[in-house]
Length: 319
Length: 272
Image 1 (cartoon, chains in turn purple, yellow):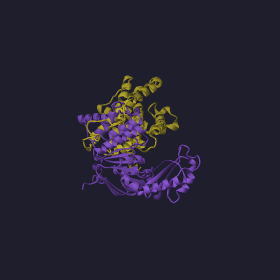
Image 2 (image 1 turned 90 degrees about the vertical axis):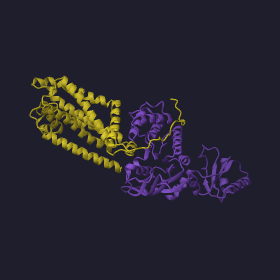
Image 3 (image 1 turned 90 degrees about the horizontal axis):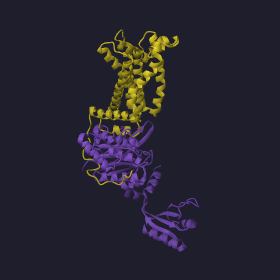
Image 4 (image 1 turned 120 degrees about the vertical axis):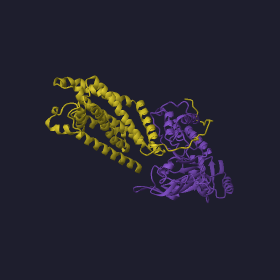
């Protein structure tokens, strides 16, 4: 068995009285994408900070490809690359000059560096921006330059700390494509995000943090299962039927129901979600009850709970 | 701008093929120094470094030299030291902003995660400080020489004169670099520093002799650091009767304070 790319055991980080990490453990195999998911202040950035040797843990330990982040910090820095939610570029320099700086600071120079920069300019579609100062670039373009500058030389482990926070949908999609391409090349990625959709889409495994502790871990599929069975979603034609339907579904666990009256005017048809512990049988039961009462529906179906539902449920139980 | 955001079919791998390797102190410092110099040339700070002392020299020289020279002195000879020292202060003030820029969220983390010696970002900034001091000397000496300033001492006196100016700017910049590193808003700190700068320059023996000040102000005017350095520089330029004790003590003190501040700032940054 090869050593894992990232290995974290009982990692604790205290800032004075405040405990940012309360003993988390996790493991990432080589070439995998781990999604570290959690709200602001849950400990995502602190984890990245410790793993990239910027700060020392208060206790516990962490290894990157078998190298301790405290005892072998210099070696670890040769293995990791960090790109954060703030584009960390020199705004006075051009895109290409920034790439050159990061190339030289990670051991690439001369002709090799020049070739690699041209390659990155093409891969990240920076042709039109290559000689523009970073200060004049849009947020999405900066992020592209920023991620490119983390890749001038090849890292074993790439930390992407909230890489899409504040980006427009198109730029976000471009970051996602990059993550997928890097994964295909076997680079281990630790991605922190507040967006469940992002983790669901990109990560092989997800670790959910809340207030410095791991509240759940597993593949996206496992996490969805952990919350229990699928749900049955019913979309009604008439808002006026809502109360009656809630009565009719007595005995089933209601997950979501529209507010009374006109509160959710944006949604033309009211939607109800109930747990479906028996899968299709539950759906059949719901259909039978509604048909018996003569209630019209727009749509009815079985679906897996979304990660949003998983996350809400897990953090509620944890707190 | 019609660039598409879709992934481009590309040559080579996105993640690169050359593994990262550690970069030594000299190479990393050189890279970071080059980055700072390039950014300063672009921002215009490099031009200000050269022209700043020229402008300030003229601002003081034009109104004051007639009166001074009627009393039998050479004002360019008298004035140049304080102009160079003031330029050193300006260098230190710009160093506050540079350090603040490097300490921004994200930038600091990114640089510190690179396989380079920990001290290189600081050394890179100081390399720019050194370069800026040399640019300032070029500007100041050019205007000074064209209006009558001369080195009358030996080559050693001249070398000591130049070294003292550089040490003053460097030591002060170490202090302000530390302030900019831990300060919340280095740009406003930099503008606040302009006020004590002006007071120290005005209330020194750099522009007029101590006798020009009221009696109660003279003890401060004579002994404040800008006067001490001005007097020492004037002595070195004249090449005679120079007592460097006070200037040497101030230099060592400033360098020691600067070093302590840098270490404290680095510690505070790790804890943050």
